[in-house]
Amino acid sequence: MIKVTSRGSFRNTQDFAQRVKSRSYLTQLEKYGAMGVSALHNATPVDHGLTAAGWYYETESRPGYFAIHWLNSHVEEPGAIPIAAIIQYGHATRTGGYVQGRDYINPAIQPIFDQIVRDMWKEVTR
Image (cartoon, rainbow, N blue to C red; front, side):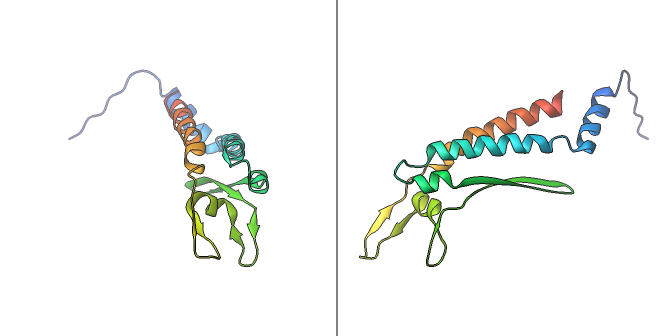
């Protein structure tokens, strides 16, 4: 037989459950989305002004899941080539050469991820 006893209040747990139920955390997604766009804009190499200006975000929420997607609208035709990706990963040239990629996305967005972790931990433990 298992016996469970408790003392004190479940107020913190009830408050947390109420915040989750009200989905008030979704407003935080907007804050982090904007922070990420700013960080990516500032980190995009200067010689790529259209790419830097093309950053935006979308939020997604469904039962049990929420996400922020950072996207870039600068693409080149033909083939809708995503310029942000070829700057990040590199690309071949028409003459058979190769342009080395520059890792600018990961260092720019990592501090945003770290902030999300810290803030969510505070939210869960308050």
